[in-house]
Length: 637
Image 1 (spheres, helix red, strand yellow):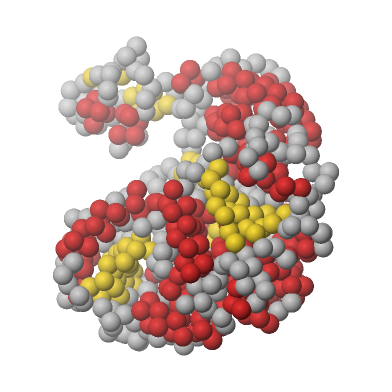
Image 2 (cartoon, one colour; image 1 turned 135 degrees about the vertical axis):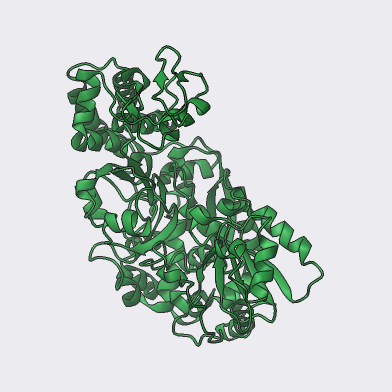
C-alpha cells in the first residue's frame, strides 16, 4: 500500500507496537549487528531457529546492537505475563537452555543465572514516552537488576540510537511501530520548508561527523542557492575504533532515510546519496532493504503521499580512503573522480556535488532529525550545554571494562564515561589517558578527566569531538608510540595533495620512529612541536589541520616520556622494544611456573616454588610472561 497520511501510518503502527511490546508468542530478539555476529550471534540465531522451527509459540527474531558490545551475543526475551529480560554472552550452546528456562520461569539454574544481564522496565524510546505503553505491568524478579540500573546503561540518553537493539532493522513495519516516518509525513503535510529549518536551528543540532557545524545554518544556506540541490549522507566512517554510524545503519536504517527525507523537504531537493564504506557490507545490505521497503510504501519515489514532493536515494560504496570522509573529497569520489579535497573558497552548500548546491551531514546527524521534528526543538535543546545541544554517541574501546556504544548528553565529564559507564580499567592497571576524536584527536590525561565533553571544552585541551571514537589507555601504553601509530595511519591516508600535510606528517613520523627505536636526539621534541604548528596552519583540509593533535597533546601532557626515550633510552611502558627489557623480581617470584610454561622461546627456567631466571639472549620481549604473571614478579626495566 501507498501511505498517504499520518492516519494511514497510525493503523500499521498500532498493530506492530503490540507485536514489539506485547507479542502473542515468546519473542526472542537476538542482536545481529556486526559486533554480535563476530561474537557468535549468527550461530546462536541458527541454533534457536532450527530448534524451535516447529514451535509456533516461539518467534526467533533479529535486532541491531543495543550497545553493550562487551557482553555480546545479547539476547532479549519477552512474552505476555512475563518480565522482559536481557541475557549476555548467549552462545549457540546456551540459547536453548535459556529459552526453556525463561518459559519455565526458572532462573535459579547456574547455567542460566550467569547469563542474565537484567530486566527491562520500559522499552519505549524517548520519542514514545508520551504514548500509552501496551506492555503489561509484570512483577519484577527479585534479585535481578533492571537494565537501566546497570552502570553501562545508567546515565545514557538515547536519541540517535533510540531504536537500535529494540527492533528488526529489516522491518519497516517495526519502525512504524517505533514512531517511524510520522515526523516526515507531518512535516510534509503541515510544515513549510522554512519552518523545518527553523526547528533544526533552534534545536542547536550540530554536525556529528566531526566538524560540529550548526546543521540548521547549513540547511538554510543550501536552500537559498539555486540549482539541482542534493542531499548526501556521509557514512564513510574511517576512524580506528569508531563504529557509531555503522551501528545505526545496521540497527535502524530507516531513521537515517527519514532524516534525509526531512532534509530534502526543507532544502528543496529530490535526490539523496548515501556514501558508505565498502567495509560495511551488513550496513549496505540493510540500507538496500530499507530503501526498497520505503519505496514500496510510497515514502520514497515520485509524488510522495499524494504531494508533489519527490525524493530518491542512491547508495554509493567508498573504496576505503579515510580522506573521503572530508566533504569535498567525498563529493569528488561520488562523481567518479579521485577523492581529493578542494580548498573551500566556495562552500559545498553553494557549489558541491556536480557544482550544484549540496547539503552533506553524517549518519548520526540525520538520525537525530526525526526526533527533533517529532518532539520539538526545545525538547532536544534541553539536553546538553549552551554551545553543544543534544546528545552524542561514542564508541568506548581500549583498556576499559565495558567496551561498547553509548549515547550521553553533551557536557558529561570524561570521567563519567570512562569510570562510571565504562567502569574503569580491568585488573589493577592504572589509567593513563583517553583519546577522543579518532586518529586526529588528542590524548587527554587523568588530570583533565573532569573536562566536559563538548566541542569547545575538548578543543581547549587540544583534542576534538570528531565522530565520537574514544580509546582508553593504561599505564602500559607508551604515549610516544601512540603518537607514532596514529601518524603512521594518517601518513598512509593523506591524499598527498598539499606539501604541509604530505611532507609534514612524513617528517614527524620519521622523528617519532627514531625516538621509539632509541635513536632520538636533543631538539627532536621542539622540532615536532614546530612541525605540528606548521601542519595545522597550512594544510588544505581537516585531515592535515587535525593530524598533529596526537603528537602535540602527548608532548604537552606526557613530555617526560619523550625525554626518557631520548635522554635515558628507556621506555617505561615496555612497548618500544629497543628501550626496555623484562626481568624477574626474585623477591616477588613464587615459582608458580606460569611464565615458563607460556614463554614461546623457553627463555625462562627454574624449579617449582623457587625464583625463576630469564635468559635475555633468548627473550624476544613478546610480553606473554608479563601478562601471565599474577604476582607482579615480571618487571620492566
